[in-house]
Length: 368
Ligand SMILES: C[S@@+](CC[C@H](N)C(=O)[O-])C[C@H]1O[C@@H](n2cnc3c(N)ncnc32)[C@H](O)[C@@H]1O
Image (cartoon, rainbow, N blue to C red):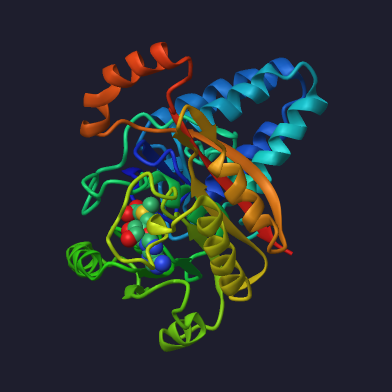
């Protein structure tokens, strides 16, 4: 049976058609391949299996409640790898791996990514350079909040570092991108945002976004430096969270409000970093040990000088006892406004002897 994959829980190759294969039939096929007496005979049998897979009426496609999902290209590539093996010993190694992938999942730590089927997760990023061409604008996601992050950022981290039903905390919730992604992925999420108007806006977005899983996605108006997080979490039925996403203002690059408590109104960089440290200390105890915190931030350019705000903020979080796991550099995707000023910035860079920011940082930390 061929179907389109839409479940957030299933391995990805998210939009490609999937095969639902009969597990018993596939197991029998693998046993038959194992029994091939020579590499040549094995190749002949593999060709027959590939033909059978292309025939939708073959018993291999007779899906039942034990059916196993495969992306056609992934399975075909596995079969080709077996066919390319020079020795039966090597071919049996690959066949064993294929057989094990039918036995049931072996999850990566802190996620529901099935390591036995890792090739199916081709959309999960594992490199430290993220070049995201286009922001995900699906559903209620909007690009119109100046300074919101692309939904792919929370999406990637939620999938890699939480399991369904776990809790995500976002103390700078802004336009609610994290909350929307968490809901889609079946994780619970709590956000805090200073601006009442944004809170109302996010509540409207959440009301319009489908709820495919019985999870919590809430936003609370408040100052993350004083809000009683323990009480907030308790109200929604948890005492700890399993992932924190921190996307503070990049000091005063964008002023989000006139509220003096807003981190974008911190009078100096030092004051900004101090507040970020206080916040991190406040939430550190809410995060389970060995679980993850992500800081998303960029640098600043001022008075002819590059300020490494990102690395300063990274050190601030590290000083709170977190283990730095990765520094990811992500391209800054252009919004309409940014595109309009590109030419001007290019001129300024040429005239001023500097390079224009095209990246920001995603610092991944683990609580000790
Ligand atoms: C960079 S934006 C976050 C954007 C968010 N990730 C999104 O996708 O929409 C930072 C947000 O932090 C909020 N903020 C600033 N200081 C705050 C504070 N002390 N407590 C809570 N929120 C604050 C700002 O109003 C702004 O919406």
